Image (cartoon, rainbow, N blue to C red; front, top):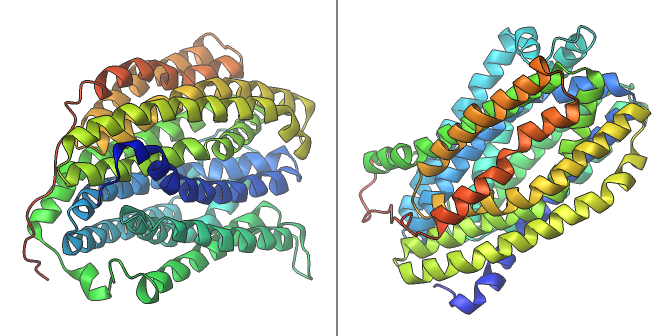
Length: 455
């Protein structure tokens, strides 16, 4: 089952390429939203950015759930225990749907209070509330789709996510064009049109992934009865090993939301500039996150198969790949920053600031590629599930957020300085990552022998 060590680069790239392409397509939708809504002015763009902040927290929660699923399911797939893999998918799906429902209820009852957490701009708040009141209906569909795509990734079926993204990309962009600008006889809904397009696209991708799993997939052959089965030992393991992963990503989501709240209080120009810079960064970082995702599957499977010496060889070779991917991605972002801004219809101040923020991100991209991929794609996937949580908590809440708040509200520094403070951990964590990975104390087999499921 395992590939030879000399083929590790081919193996990881064969998994990373579809993941990266999927991310490119997904981020292209975000870029299209950014461009189309941005063409209406800075107010709609700022409102959309603020309205998405709560979803960022949900997104990180679901990323945590899918990461926990990947860690355990990949190790079980390494020993070809498909029954345990299917039960783990069912566990993750139940909790992801519960999370989506919770966030929907919060935004149904407290939409304005949610928006006020992220901005105090009086002209932005009502527009952001309108956007949120539509966007919230996409939450549950998003949760289901992400878990099912991650489930397929655990068993190396990575192209389905890419194909799914291609379909939803064209649907989303087409509906954006129709609903934002009022084409084909539809009313011109502006930023709210983008929210409606997102909801429709989320529903479509959920339907498509369910149809794929039911009628096409041959590796797991999942049926509804498989997802409602449970096993108390697996449930305990999911939370024992998954809880620090989920909690870590929840805190990371809170971190991003806190960053959004800080930026949101620097004015609409800063908010719009950060929205542009983050969207462009997401597009150029797909290779970084694709490689990290592929590495987690490979490391998890190899640990699950008990081939620990091969795990060490893979870890050494992957670190070199992470640095190369980071240098390429950061360089491309730096080169493209001037040309990207030609696509936006924003003020000169916003364009200049956005380019400066992208310069910061082109540097931190290198650190992100190495430390994030090493810590999540190797250390966490290899079984050391608590380390990333503790490391992130220390850096974010003792360094990143305090330094940014001091820069913004005490020293009244420029948005570029504040933004650099918010991203400084991406470089600082590299020192921790290089030591942790190469000590190899993170290798832990988390699997158990197959157990009987109970309904």
